[in-house]
Length: 123
Image 1: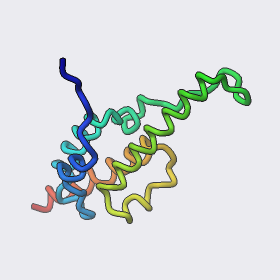
Image 2: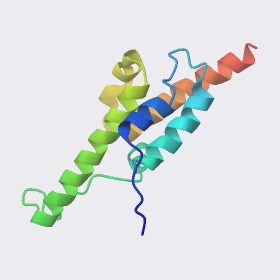
Image 3: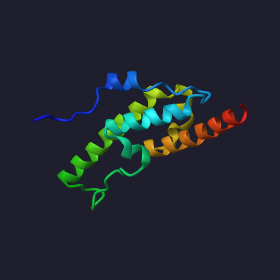
């Protein structure tokens, strides 16, 4: 009987090229990064399908609600960590105030998709 496990963090670091600040490697980066983040089971934090649980009674969450919120926060932190490993500090700093990883990722995709399009049109 075999078990399936997520690739190690060192595999993630070695297997995904860092995003060039000019966006010259955007297309390859986006593909590699998406695949690797899916393997780390964190893609829902990037595409926005994983949302933070909200307790039924906001000021008094149940123990199971608290556990779910803590698990979501932990995965959100992992997603943020994966992102900061592979984008330039200036890129992250530019978008970090947007809030969730999904919002930061959406802004980075918009920025680098346009940079990539501009670079291809200049060729």
